[in-house]
Structure formats: C-alpha cells, structure tokens
Image (cartoon, rainbow, N blue to C red; front, side, top):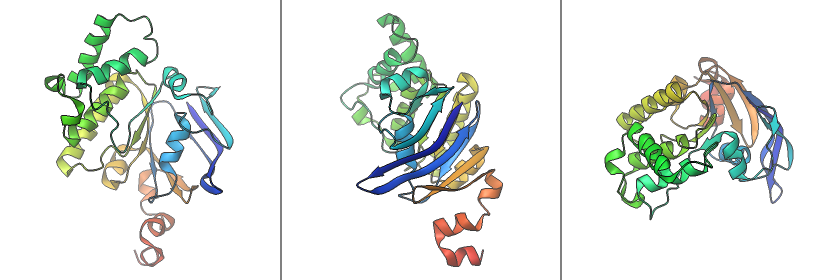
Length: 245
C-alpha cells in the first residue's frame, strides 16, 4: 500500500530523514519508533504532504505522492493525527469533524445535512457525541485525542498516520484509546502507521516496528525482536545498558 524508497529531507544542511526505505502492507499496524529527534514526525509530514522530500520516492497504492499538497493526499485516502492536538479551537467538536467530512475523499457532492449526520456518527463512535456543542478549546486532553481520531476517521482514510496518540494520557486512558483505535480499524478497515513513545502500547498494537535514529532506519522487524535488539536499547538508553541488559 505504502512504499517509501530512499527518502531524504534536510533542513539547513542537517538530514532530518536520510535514505529511509520501508513499506506498509494493507491492513497492517506498523510502529515507527526512535528517540526524540530521530525524524519520525518529519517522515509523517513527508507522507502527508506538509514537506516535500529532497530525494526519494513515496508511493501510495502505486501512485507517486511525494510533493503533492496535503488536500490531494487526503482525498487519495491518507489522514493523520498530531502529537500536539490541532483542533479548530473556536469551533464546536461537531463542526470540527464536519470540516473533515466535507474534505475527505468521495465527499464533494454530499449535502450539508448528510455531512452533519455523518460527523455526528463519528463523534458518537469515539464517545464524544455529548460534547458535540462544546468548543474544542474546552475539551480535556483525552477528549482532544478522541476528537483528533474522529476528524481523521471522518475523511474515510485507507491509511491512518498516528503521531503519539498516547502522549499525556494516563495508563487507563491509554488503554481506552488503544481499544478505540482497534475498534476503529476493525470497523472501517484501514491501515496504520503509528509513531509512539509508549513502548507497552506500540509493542502490543503493531505487527511490525521500524526504528529510526538520527534520521536513518536502524532496524525493522516484529516487536518481540525489536525490543530485545541491542541497537535499540543503545539508541534509547545508551551503550552501557545495551552491554548489560
């Protein structure tokens, strides 16, 4: 479904992403991990069109998307959430999701009443229908995370990019959010590429994990192999811990 080949992006001579290659198959949950500054969010920004790569190829369902604007990439079927929630703060929760409904793929001729009905459906799905008239700025962090998910789902994605969905959530909220994501994937049949620092969650959720460090891919494989790899332990904790597990 997604083919990333030798993708590179530099800022002021510093390579944030350097010759990264991997693929994501339809129906997979692929984790993307690495220490802070590893290039994970930059890579998501390249996939969804916020940045254009300096070199390399990004193909989605056989179509080259590198350099396309975000709205076109969204309508091809790629949506995302953000590490720091990016709601329309002055809009109600319902209207925020309504924007996504009207701008998602295959929605251009939808009537406003149908769009409101569909936006309400996604809010109900993530447990926020009772907050439909609440301004986004007045939601708590968990509710904002769920609003981000509802907005992403409302574009009807084939590929969902998740950027640290669990950041700031307590363990109980993180488990609830994981169940919500699993339920959403089962119901709406999309593929996931997921950045996450909460290792317990990503090792439970992902079938495969890609590891970045200093913008380069240093490992890829099943979670059980990745979490015991000395290179990964060293990347997160330092060489001393890698030598003495």
